[in-house]
Length: 127
Image (cartoon, rainbow, N blue to C red; front, side):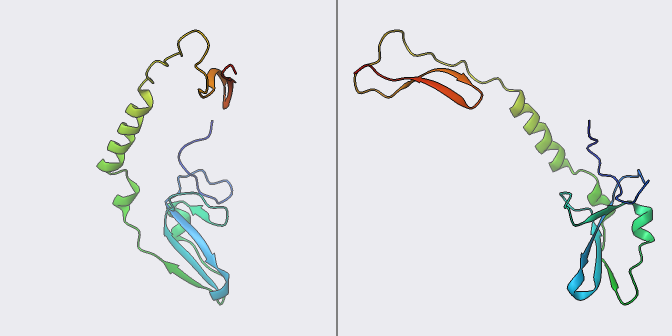
């Protein structure tokens, strides 16, 4: 199982990530900012220690965006949205109404007979 906590990208570091590092090669700039919402393939997530010790190659500039420590914790709205999503997922769908037995009326649409995954078996109306 994969841990929901993103870890530092540095080799052998297992601490949780708190910042994201990106490079702007055209400007010779390394940008270190708050942890990105999603892990991106061309960005590096860093723990607090590695983000503080970050240096750039000679001739490069490091831009450090202000990080709000309170923003790393879930807010009340985040927790409420998560609780709402869990409640919605827990709701059972209403029972499916099966069509009445017997042949469908002429000119009617096909009737779903069975379903397997995303595939449906339809019965066409009698001509």
